[in-house]
Amino acid sequence: MSGSVNKVILVGNLGADPEIRRIANGNPVANLRIATSESWRDKATGERKDRTEWHSVVIFNENLAALAEQYLKKGAKVYVEGAQQTRKWQDPRTGSDRYTTEVVLQRYRGLLQILSSPSDDDQSGTRSGNRPSSQSGRQSGSRSYAEQSAATGQSFYPDDDDFHRRNFDDQMSDEIPF
Image (cartoon, rainbow, N blue to C red; front, side):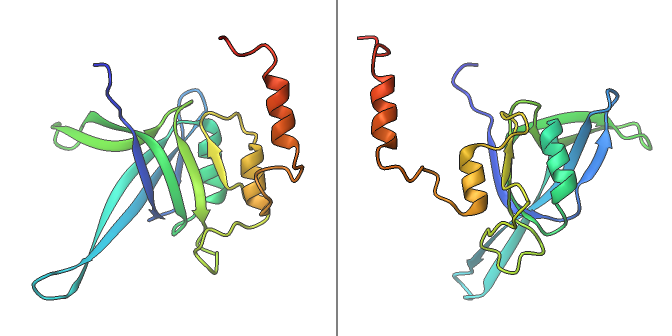
């Protein structure tokens, strides 16, 4: 079916430390349990109500699994992008078919961003010096300039006022097809 999208975005807190296991070829796979919450006021009683939803996240990307293993702990706030998948398995005790729905970050698709750790005093997303702020399945372990800048508090753009004009002029030469 063309024109369909399977993309899940979650911002929540880890309910437990990541569970890391190795598949047959030795690559790590990380399993996360992420809690998302919503709250509202009951119109009838004026009472505040809360609901927490738990999500299973499976990371098959080696770099992201290593990042999760090294830096994530219970309580950390994370941003995750992946695809929803339902898999079928058999219960070994009863032999009956069971189904599990998970958010999956495949080898080259998916995103994991650490927003805060449980040890951060203020939960505003402040990053400690050596901890990577994010890692994408589309990257090969190196952090982009934007990520490095965000982690160090620097501006994303260079301070040079002529930076954009020079780069634009250099690229305009013969690259326009019309």
